[in-house]
Image: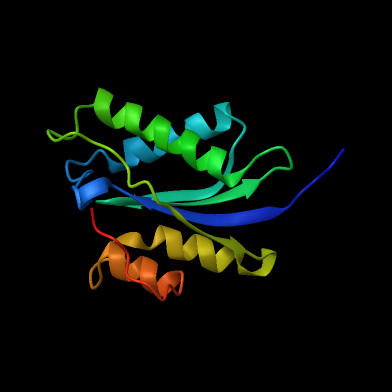
Length: 143
């Protein structure tokens, strides 16, 4: 049987940077996504969100693609957000997502980074975070 240990840090945002999770539903949302991932055989090392985007550390199994995993998690998240009526505007995710591989030795640092979203966003925006973390040399589009 083929085995893989490929960890990826993936991030995606809400189209238009609409704010969610300001009403205390953030932990309930994260718990729901974690449970949904287990049901779909997606191994999450950690997942966290801030008011307008999600970070997750996911292990890619040999039969999985990152694109499929992100699509499934976004779909599950969208259904939950709409069912809870958390937004009055039409909700959707940005089409883009950002991802970087994480070596075994850097897993603790990546987990800490993902869990520190509240502190990290005290001084910077999602756009700035993505550009810095993923060392992008192009501007991140705002929709």
